Length: 400
Image (cartoon, rainbow, N blue to C red; front, side):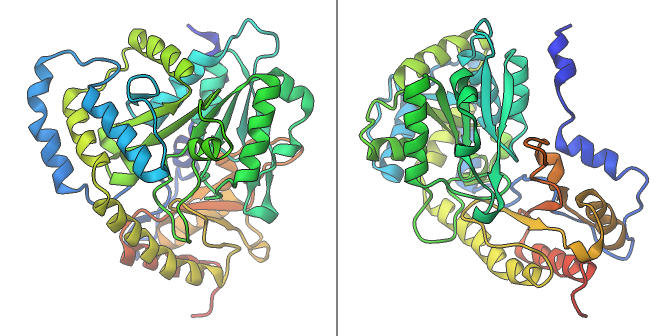
């Protein structure tokens, strides 16, 4: 058995099940879950139809590189969304969702024979970064976050000696769970560090199409192009249809960037067995080619955040995120509850599920940056999310 499996920590949702063991949720309230970031809007009918129409492809083995029409769908979307012209043959690759891709890309990049192999990731963070790092025989370094900047990552807080050992950096923008978007000057700093130390940047952008304020979020490839880095050296961006198109069960996304890294990743995936089903490819082509359903999806999230945020802001430290579908809320000191106790008592008294923030972070630099916060995923319908917000407000001490 691989001994490094013992280093993996339980996934946040497993910890949540353990936390709630023995609790009887309030029978007087219908259950509402804001705990899991699983899109629950309806999958567009045209995507379902494209999936069905592609079933004849099940009679053939798919290519790991994907059908040329699929890769053209990727580059077409990148052109429309970011104004970028990538080579469909060498700079994009289909993946079976961003989680699978982030894990396998880490195994492709890391050289465990190099002393002190290190992967830098945000803190709080998406747990796949940590698991992929450990199973690649590297060590994670948790970059501190800045509460005064909506928990944006403080890259300057990473010591120089850590950067010297770094082989891979995970960037998540818009961030999970905070929704913070990284501006161009921060990208410029990271590119300079990558040039100096030779590490690869993996830019996780699966929330890029859910935004509420002004311009759409800046992407990593877009930032590179603005800074004259047209070859996207040492940069790969990861994106997915799950949140954008409400198809988490489709397991479809793509990576794009440095052709040298894409070539190595294709080799790894050929042995790894990462080919995308022809039916999924057909549905993906349809999804990437349409923006009307994405705008409608974004409008639904905007309605929820506009109604829910003011209700919660009466009693919690919470603000509208830059992007994404999470609220990252502080637990009021007056309640005298930890973030885990808050989640337990809220379920018991009002039958609403939220995720303790400490489950999404690790103690580093003397603190757990997720402690005393909870993550709320506004993935249910508008009315259900608003009802959950009202219950949370009453639980936290709002009048009435």
